[in-house]
Every structure is written in structure tokens, then in C-alpha cells.
Amino acid sequence: MAAQPETERQLSALMEVSQVAAESAAPAEVVEVLAARLGMSYATITLRDRDTGEFRIDGAHGLPKESRNDTRYLPGEGVIGHVIESGEPVLVPSIDAEPRFLHRAVQQKRRSGQDSSYVCVPIKMGAEVIGTLSAERVHGSSVPLAEDARILSIIASMLALTVRTRQDARRERRQLAEENARLQSRLKGRRPARLLGDDKRMREIYAQVDQVAPSMTTVLVRGESGTGKELLAEAIHEASPRKSAPMVKVNCAALPENIIESELFGHERGAFSGAVRSRKGRFELAHGGTIFLDEIGDFSAATQVKLLRVLQEREFERVGSTTTTKVDIRIIAATNRDLGGLVAAGLFREDLYYRINVFEVTMPPLRERRSDILLLANHFIDKYSQGARKSVRRISTPAIDMLMAYHWPGNVRELQNCIERAVLLTEDEVIRAPHLPPTLQTADATGTAHRGSLKSALASLERELIVDALKQHQGNRAAAARALGLTERIMGLRVAKYDVKPKRYAGPR
Image 1 (cartoon, rainbow, N blue to C red):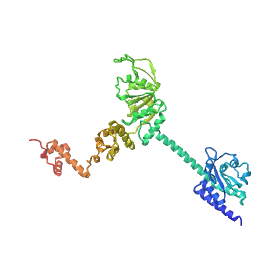
Image 2 (image 1 turned 90 degrees about the vertical axis):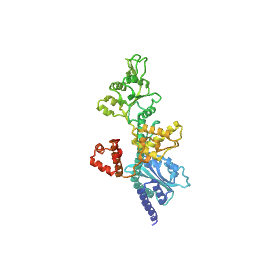
Image 3 (image 1 turned 90 degrees about the horizontal axis):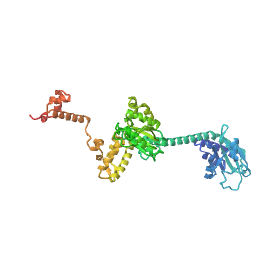
Image 4 (image 1 turned 45 degrees about the vertical axis):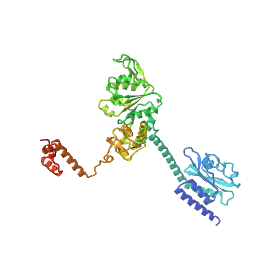
């Protein structure tokens, strides 16, 4: 009969531990149940770190927080280490008399001077020890150590699967977080100083710049006119080890065919009429740095052949020279043309195309990154306000609506020009709808939106066309009908319907 209360406490503890394990699997809650239901003065759960192999306290009752965080165990160290190594429970009748007891976790715990008994059991998955469960009670308790060991072993077996599941979930969350951080790093990249935008496609470009800038790899920048291809080339150069060396820019479309070879490769004195002295070409000037070939799709077939050699060998001859010049350059090319289509049409060399298209970066058109429009607009406002010595602070809502509704065929360059114009026109601190170019004006913004129905709008247009035709043919209904593709009968009906007076438009008799 005397054992009945203890049995009831044990059953109550087992039931509560089972419930806690099912609901949360939190070690701290399990040890609190042990302390509350079984009268333990101290209890811990240690779990193996699957990355380091160390066993760390994952839940404790009766320990300072700093002890829980700092304490580590390896197989063979102390009582807990022995349980880890052997996979068998250890019963310690008297902690003070046990030499293997390290007091590692309890060294900061203020002891009352009373000796304690201690039990430590393994938490196992099959033959693998994945943790330990230990508890301490005041020495001389009426509860036998073997009974404590039995109850702790039952609880340990109940916890094993839950603990392993929790460990797996924790590891998966950590791996997922690490992978997500790596992904975000790749997407975001470090925004180069010359580029602006927070759109997802721009963040991908920042990551590409980070990836390619440190190398010597040839880069092909694609994109519509005005998207910022030259700025991207500058960003790659400035993020590269060559940033202190020159970056030479060549607009291939702007160079006349008869001088392009001299411009690129230089010439010797007397090489042609007007060559009064030797001159370095753009490739020599870029030695040690970067050369940017803009609109490379406009090169002639002859120039493409010579450019291919430079790409392959990094060498060339000046016009009028037989001496080979070697250069150390990084090449960035750009185009707004479909080079693949030009290759298929025989207008661009296939071998040159594959030489320049090693690492491709595509600048998105502004209409595909609308979330950046206001960011860019505000940037240009700051830039041109300083130049115009004005204090323009914001854009009005109607003007914002116009900026967001426009399709921007000229991309960022067109937006830049629009804002420069608006800053010059405004006479206060606000850019308003009338300050924007006529191409951006909408019916709503100008107050000219048609307020009637489609039927009335069509009728108005039809009347206007009839009147214009009559004016053109000096009131001659037959001639006006032929011009509009109508029969004279239909023309007569329309004239009557809209109360048009053909004689009003008749010429002098």
C-alpha cells in the first residue's frame, strides 16, 4: 500500500511526458515534468549534434542558463560520456563518492551540502545513442535508484523517435535557411554603384556582375537601346581587378567604315593619306584594362575577321605595320540586335558570335521593371535639380500615373530625358502632369477624356469625317461620298442624320 502513491506519480509522469512529446517534443518541457511529478531536484536531456558529434544540453531543470549553453560532452567523458560510449544506464548512489562525476554542468549550481543520488540513461535509436536523460534527487530518498532508472528508461524510449524527428526537422530548417540565404545572395548580389533598381531582374544582374567581374571572361551585354548597357559594362569593369586601368569605349555603329580599322588597331606614319604620325588604336589604349565594343552587330565582315583574331590571340598589327602587337585586355561587347538572327542570315560570323557570347547578361527594358520607374525618376530628379539649382522634392500623383502608364520605348534614357525636361519646366517643388512630354499625356491627365458612350463617340467621328470630305470637295456630295467609299444614297442619309449643310462648304461660283 505504501508504494501506491509513488506508482501513481510515476504513471502520471509517464502520461504527461507522453502528451508533451506528442505535442511539442521540447526537452525543456519534459525535464520540467520530471521535476514536478517525480520530485527530481535536477534533470537534463543531452542530444548529439549531428554536425560536430558533441553532446550538448538541450533541456534542463535546476541549472543556470549559462551552464546549459556552454556544457559539452564527448564519449567516455564522465558519467554522461560513459553512458554515451556504452549505451547502458549508470546509477550513482552518491555523487560525492563517484570519481567519474565531473560536475561539469552543476559546478555553478549552489549546493545545499546534502549529497545526491544520480541516474543517467541513454536515449537510443536502435543501437545508436542519440542522447541521454539524467536526473538527480536528494540522497537517502525512499525511491530506489533502480526504480528511477526504470522510469527514466521508459521515458527515454518514448522520447527517442520524437527527438530524432525533431533533430531531422531542425537540420532541414537550418539547411533550408542556409540555402535560402545563398539563393538570396545570388539574387541580390552587391548593387554596383552605377546601376540602380530593386526589381528582381536587376537583382539577378547584380549577382551576375559579382560572378563575372573578377574573371577575364568576355561578356556580351544584350538589351534594347536606352536600357543601360554601357552602365553595366562600367559596373563590371569597376568591380574587376582592372578597375585602376583604363576602360576604352568604342561605338561601333558611329565609326565610318573607312577609318574603323585605324581607330581600333592604330596606324603607322604614312600608312595612308593623312597619316602624318603613328597613332595607337583603341585596343592598345585599353592595354591592361577593358575595352567596351558597343553595337558590335554593326561591324562589317572584314572588321569581324580582324576582331576574331584579337579575341582569340589578343594580338593584331597596326595599319601599315608588319609588327605584331600583343595586348592584355578584357572585352565587353554590347548589342541591341539579334546576333543569332544575323548569324543565320550570314551577316555576322558564327565563330565570332561564339567568341563574344561566353557570358551573356541581358538588361531588361523599363516596361518589364515598372517597380523601378519611381526609384529611377527620383534619382534623376535629384541629379537634375542640383544642376538646375532647384529644389524639386516630389512628383504629383497624376504625373506618377502617367509615368507608370507609359510604355517607355526609349527605356531608362527616355525616362531620364523626361525628368530633365520636367525639372527645367517646373516653377515650384513639384513635377506635375503638364511638365511631362506630350508623348506621356493622357486624356485623363489633360481633361480631354470622352465622357459619352461609344455610340456617341462613333457618331461624332462619323460626322467629322463627312464634314471634312465635304470641305475637301467644296460641298460636292457625290465626290465626298466617293472619297469616303459611300453611295450617294447613304451619303444623303448621313447628311440628313447629322444635319450637315453641304452648301456651306461650297466654293466660290
